[in-house]
Image (cartoon, rainbow, N blue to C red; front, side, top):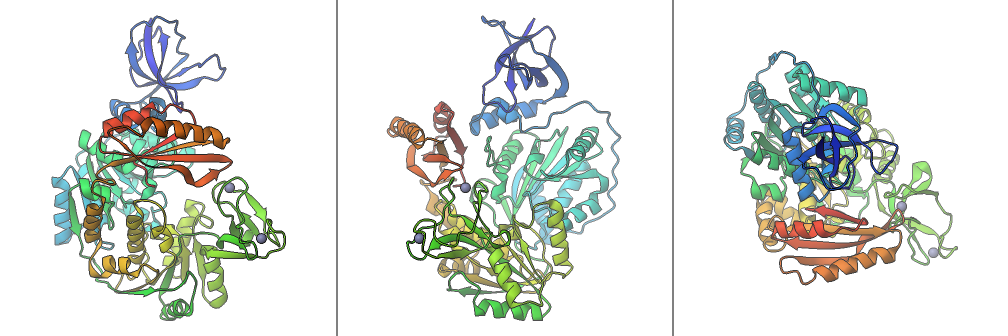
Length: 614
Ligand SMILES: [Zn+2]
Ligand SMILES: [Zn+2]
């Protein structure tokens, strides 16, 4: 009889011991029964052990799927660093299975001429195992990516191009397919199961050598991954919001340092953490020398005459406009004129947003929806006024003001599928849309050829959030949006803000590189990248239970020598879906000590976010 430790997929339990008469290889996917439950549970053999003193249960099924050593090692790192069970870490991976190899056939009939500077940048990425391409919008980093990918696949290795979920634009897809043909496959969460299976099959057989895709693409079965490119590396969507709360960019750097895999990170506005730890090459030169005129508006968040006239003028000159707002729906807050109460979600401590097209108020956290009340639900008499306009409202107002123009929305309410994304982007680039009104989705790496005006509204609400990262978030977002205007020649940017000094300084006087250097100085001894911060949330339907857990850990940790509690108390959003939430922020420059404390927090009501973005 053989004895094995098996990690249960998607289970918070640590590995358990099972037995089998079969000699099973480490990494094999098996099925076991758990506490006499009828349904079998998928699990992975992670260790061969001695006969234990207790009685073991037999492994029920042995599959032909397996996880290789790199997957097992990286999953072990994930479970330690992002504080989850080994089974939870392994569950992000797609396992290997045996397929017949196809013969390697190189068919790239496309040559790319790199400019002098691009050539230097490319050389830099080849000289450094992990490198950052700090490349201004329009400086042609895609050509460098393509050259690096060609180089890797000519060595019979595979390449991965990671992109934020929504930023694989039709242009990018066309471009990559044109160069690499059937050797490249596109991977994202909305691809159908059948298609996914056939991509895996082709990846294993060697027919597909390049994957371009979102976060989950890092966890596919690569036989010989030689290169990982992380495009738009600053993008927060690379960090998972669910357990394991891993950061795909940081994990790529980890893989690059540990294995024989080259890593290139690219961005026009790199994250401070990458800028701090990865050697960079600055690519400033743009193909289309673009002159940019920036105007600041010290106004309220509204469409005023200055903005409307500028939009009209731009469209009359046969150019296009993008309008950015951080909020979707018509209005974020509904407040009673008489008693001043806001209409909140009954299950969450957030304001309900007004969605006029559904004639409803909706919660953006739990999706609770209700009819729009005629009078205030609190005082029963007051009338309700709406505040903080969002994309839907600006879209409607622009339609009314400019009835002969075509306005479209570009946010999560209107773009729900990849097909919808492609369709809207195509219509916009075919000049069938005059104005695109959207949220952050607008900024994600899409090329707009004919946009000469970017209107940025409400950027201050990002700057006013509570996080040590707000300056970085707001400025990089602003630069990303501004970069969409004037790709060919002249471009204008209208920015509505009460913080002109800050933005003006880093947009017009100095640039993002100076910002990163200044920001680094301001974070010494206080914040990442010099220290690590973990956010610990206790949540429960009973606020008292959550609070009790928090208090206990605050007491236990407050005198800890090697870590600080930066803050604790109710979360900014205290209640979500009827769960009351308390948080504690821990900071330390000793990662080992911090992790050992995090792993010691055993209560089931906790969620731990290492390297939190908040
Ligand atoms: Zn009222
Ligand atoms: Zn809600």
